[in-house]
Image (cartoon, rainbow, N blue to C red; front, side, top):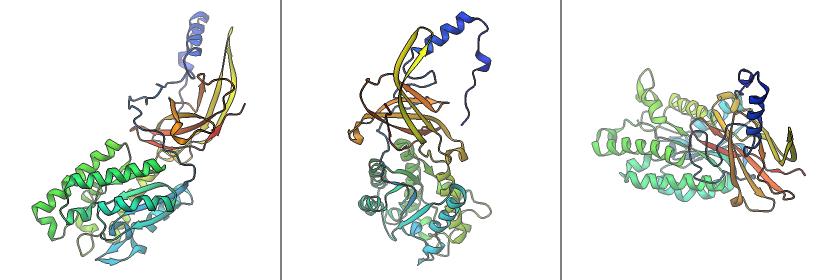
Length: 353
């Protein structure tokens, strides 16, 4: 993450410099760029933090239908699907990772919506990769129904503390593709999935676009003989696309600390809590982090009690001057990408008095 330098902004005159310094001193928080409760790009805080300290940071759930499970020519082949391929790719780039296969052949989004709650409660992963809707197209389900189910899956994941990555469904070239009613629903569903990712502020893996743009041969080169499930090359393309989406995730900051302290400048002093953190090593790979969001609660309160304090850009510290002296607070910090997607929270830092 690039740090701001003030070297070129220093005044050679003492008085103007002191005026700026004192003005910065009386700002709420530290003298870095932030807007309380709002990201630097004006995206309002529309939900609470993604928080569950009991989840495994290096575990990912692959959730979907037979394409997630791993099927070639209508035959089960999970060992050839995207799950083991993605696992290997993440191990190589992010370190030891576990990708769990929760694909279920023939499942529609309605079934996925009913199933996802038990899956996330058992798997306890920090991230879930959701790709469903192919079977909805097969049975001509209304796009609005499919999107409502996907929206519910995203909400359940977020509420449990997982960050979901949503995917469009892969192209098909079987007989149904050449019937206008099926083709129209397929295209409309993918368009709606893209909008849903924006609406819910979650990452998108656009499998439909990647397959359609594939050279040489387009989607036909990536589909097995049934013209609906990927072939081995197609599953490798799926794995690489998922890997790119995972590598760009806003992984939670590390080494978060909070300490009561006094800040002094000239004839003035203020007391507060200094919160510091370090960027997650994984986020340095993609370089997509714009800012950090700080949350606070009193010790002993529930997760729902976390309140947004500020969004900080170009720094890894925040001076909380609104803290009441003698009250023990707990802080968490989340990374925010340049597109406004907010990641899961860090481990809890309890105030050091």
